[in-house]
Amino acid sequence: MRLGNEEIAPCFNQLSVRLIVFVLLALGVLLIPAPGRSQLMAGSMDVHWNEGISNCANNSQRPLQVHRYNTRTFILRESLCATFEAACRRCHVSAGPS
Image (tube, rainbow, N blue to C red; front, side, top):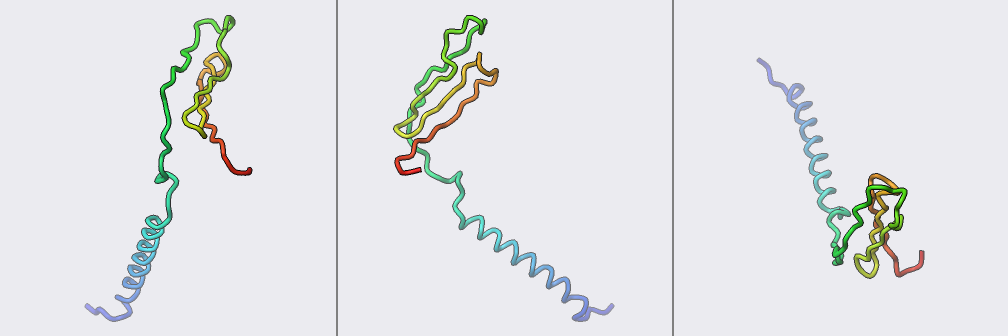
C-alpha cells in the first residue's frame, strides 16, 4: 500500500478549497445586512375590515378600504366584491423627493 504525495495532495486541495469557499460564504451571509433584519415601524392595526356581502349586485361598500398604519404607511384592502381574494397592499409614503 503506497501513500505518496500524489495520492494525498488532490484530496487535500479539494478539501481546502471547499473549506475556504464555505467560510467566505458564511462570512458574506453574516456581514451583509438582510432586509428581514430591518427594524419594524410602530403602528396601529386597530381596524375592522369589511366582511363582504352575500349579494355583490347590491354592494354599498367601497371597492377599496384604506387603513392608516402610521404617519407614513397605509394598508389598502380590496373589497370582496371586487376580487375574491380581498388582497391587501402596503403603501409607504416617502418624505423625500422621488
